Image (cartoon, rainbow, N blue to C red):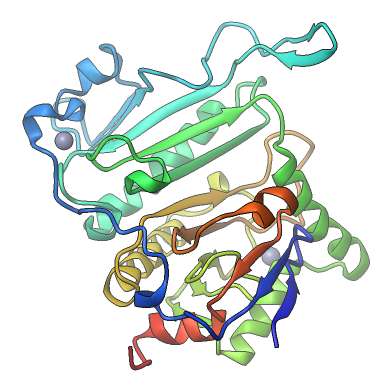
Length: 329
Ligand SMILES: [Zn+2]
Ligand SMILES: [Zn+2]
């Protein structure tokens, strides 16, 4: 019997319909050739060139950089002197395309996030935090850091890189998931995500891995097969205000989850991103930031695009078991 499951935060519904193909090798597998393109054609071997000569931030130093932040050469949103301005376009409403669009590049041409050493992975997240603080310029309302891993999910350049975007409004998708958390907080005076973690840790079936400060689990209402969520155990509304020890453990669990997806789920193309509270609209004490990993292991079709309802053929309990390495493939 298929099951309809609701996301407690966004109110989104998914249809869990396991039974047909549920195991990684039976799924539509957007696995790309993981063969590095030649270094000679890589724009990120010369970041001065790729960033039009501008390097916004480098670690540990500009000369010996292991991590560098550059402006996107083809930005979707541009950072200007003024904030975005609303205007009318005849019948329609629009805004000028002001915001932030930066690239964060790690030096090694081949090492994706899963394979960075712990120090560099932690520092990468610390750089994200720093860029979030810089993006808080009074014009931006929301920022997101993300990775596109594989051409089917948006990676157009081989060399491992991450993007930071800030928008002049809070995206409706974010507003919607904040809503569920706020309603719960007003009713119970507790954080929905803290309570959810407590339940999941009691139940254990969807937990993939834990370390001192973070936990990786397969969400109850997973939209895609083998979706993973990595959450700090303690309550922190804002990513950019979270202490380094916690950031380090979240980064390390994301790395471990990516290695598990590579080993047990066929190394699918995937995105990961940080789900932070908006800059705008107060402190959002009910929000509990986290990272989401979305493998591209299913086709999106008419139902998903027309209704926002996703069909997921892999039971998250089963996905967690497989990713723990405890299931016969
Ligand atoms: Zn390169
Ligand atoms: Zn919480």
